[in-house]
Length: 127
Image 1 (cartoon, helix red, strand yellow):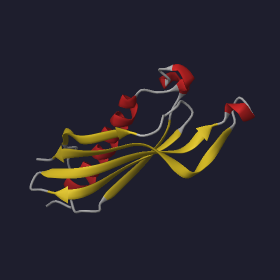
Image 2 (tube, helix red, strand yellow; image 1 turned 135 degrees about the horizontal axis):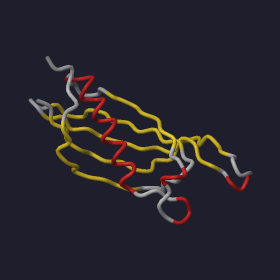
Image 3 (cartoon, one colour; image 1 turned 30 degrees about the vertical axis):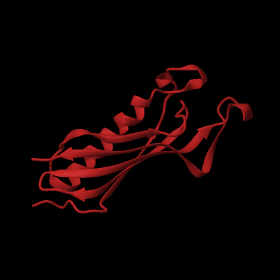
Image 4 (cartoon, one colour; image 1 turned 90 degrees about the horizontal axis):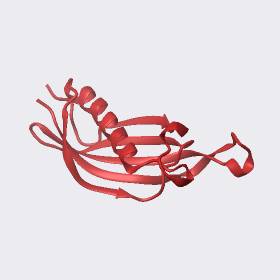
């Protein structure tokens, strides 16, 4: 029996290591956040359906702010629609902490409010 219902939510937090910087300014590529969406969607499917599920695709993806090495990200998946085997999921990736190298080599700050970096809507399918 499925536990999938609208409003079920899973949250992950992840530090972005400097080894993942891909572009000038210590930027990471957009695929980094999309991979995190896949991870949080997997846990969501396990919690609601007892199966890792499969990602069917994205209806929309919006890159709204940069993600940099040294950031701490909060990635959220929330079910917004439940079908027989499909679940429509809204994703967000917020930067909750960011390095502040101008204050010192290892300095960082908590962002209040967090910075919305990426949002998306996608569909997962479970057996």
